[in-house]
Length: 140
Image (cartoon, rainbow, N blue to C red):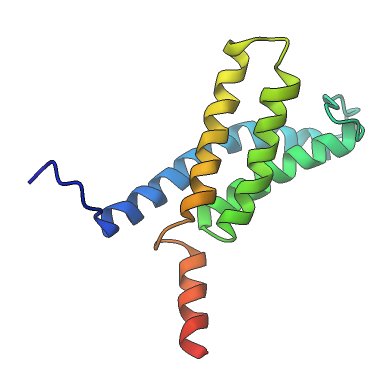
């Protein structure tokens, strides 16, 4: 039956894997240029939305958009890795792009919703989190 409402766990786990990987690859497109800027030779020019300084703000954005995205792809510390990404997107929506209007706020809002979903659901079965937790519970 096509229209069942019960949850198919295998399909849900596969969907979470697909979702994690795709959303993280999409975020890496934003994170890689920031990583190159952080470690490049040119002077760092980056927004400082919360008053930490341009270099610190860039480093935090790189941590979230690059490092945490890689963690999401492999499913390691998924819920924790979602938090810096969520915070970064909320800063983009609520501080950085406020003067720009909805057209510039829409994408970070969509990303924020994605990270809330991963924060709530976790990574699913096809992740290092699941593998390590399963291994840990067998030894206890």
